[in-house]
Image (tube, rainbow, N blue to C red):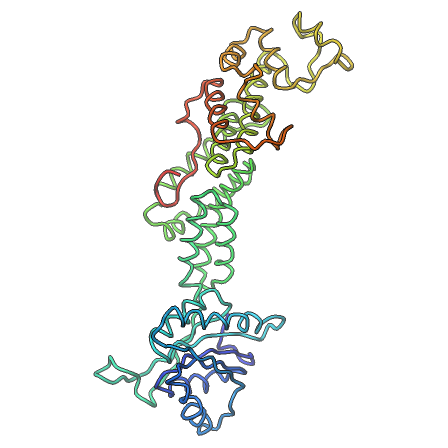
Length: 422
């Protein structure tokens, strides 16, 4: 957004203090189509008494204007509350018109009024203006000398406010809300004008996108996003200078882990990935989702072992290859000489094959009616209507880790952008 572009219909909001000359200089320079003056009760008379007469003395027509009075210029909270009423006007100004632009001018008014307007307008689709001067009173530290006003180049606030988006996205990221973090960063990136600011925000978004994709088991997209982050690692350092080297190391470690996930030959890495995903769901209080992932991890463990015994798919097991007495028991449910197995049947077949995994399955009481798997089966995401509780998840997690003989410290752990464990 460039407020200096010719033939643009401008809306400008001015805070009004006791010095009208800077406001008149801005009005003369920008010639806005519409103006909102924001005075205090004490400075409202400046508009009709000084600003408009000075404007006419310059040979300029009065713009269409409104007045929004701040009841108390020394009450910051009240200033913020009052100025928020202007947001609909600003947002509606440019709708459906490419040549309409909005801006706020922070030159006039008290410091508190200008600070309140800057705070409120930080998310508005507008630019910030300021009128400086070649000369000031009090040996250069006072107010601008009348007649020496000069325009200070307008700025896009998002080039400077991107750090706020990063802080907000960091908090969302560390709570596992990767989609929301990416949305915040994308919005800030699109609002920024500076190429460097856009690049930093995009790199942060790539990081959030990577872990969002991993959470959704889209490992190919995850690796592509990781590659983008590593390619622009210095931009990540600009956003998170104290965390750059730690995050770079974790990303490289995670890429190595992902490189070992082969969907054509799933192994312990797939199981670890499922268990880690379940733990992240549990941290969010989503225990039904968590136990569903643990159930799948237990099933994958059996499928991996059955593959080692020559059974490539549990959805099509040749009945002739099933040892007795299971072959006779399962004969009635065979179709075209093949049977399809569920989780419990997977482990029954492993038992018939004398596989030690089935022994650990039984030792964890996973084959009984009192099995921790009951929580999953009774869950609303499976066959029942009971929400899963935290203790049920913890029991199934302990059983799963013992079943697959996994060191819980070996689970892939997503990073915290603030530098502590999450």
